[in-house]
Length: 209
Image (tube, rainbow, N blue to C red):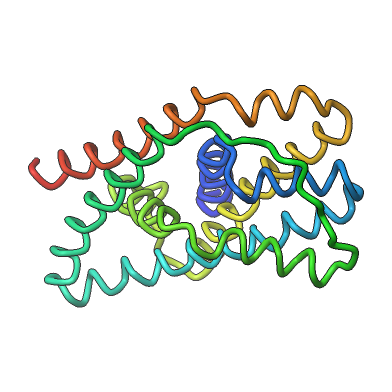
C-alpha cells in the first residue's frame, strides 16, 4: 500500500508541475500537428527518461545527505537559491511565441533522442525533486526507504510528466487553436514562477524552523 501511495502521489505532483508548458511540451504539440501522435509519443517518452533520471539522482542526493551532514547543510541552501532564481526568471519571462517550426523527425530513435535533449538541461528538475523528497521524509507513509519505494518514486515522476505531455499531444491533434492559445498564455509563466518561489520560501522556512 505504501508503495502505491508513493507512486500515485509522486505522479500527481509530477503531472501538476508539468502543466506550465516548456520546450518539451511545445515540441510535442508541434510534432503531433506536423507528423502524428505516434511520433509525438516517442518525443514524450524521451523527456520522461530525463525526468525519471533526475528523480533518481534526487534520491541518491538525499542518501548522501545522511552520510555527509555538511553536504546537506550547503545543498539545502543552494537549492533555495536555484529555486528562487528559476522562479524569478520564469515569472518575468515573456510568453512563448509559437513559430512555424519544421519538425523533421520521422523515426522512433531520433524522436526519443529529441525528447531527451529537450529535458536534459532543465536546471529546476533536480532541486525540485530534492525538495519533494525532503518533504516526503516528514511523513511515515511517504518516506522513501526500500528499493521498491525508490522505484515507485522514479516511475511516478516519469508517469506524471508523460501523461501531461501526452495530453498536450492529444489535444493538439484535435484542437490546434486551443492548444496554441493555452501554450502562449503569459499567465502560466507567472503561475509556475510563483510555484518555484513558494518552494524556495518553504525550504527556507523549514531551515529556520
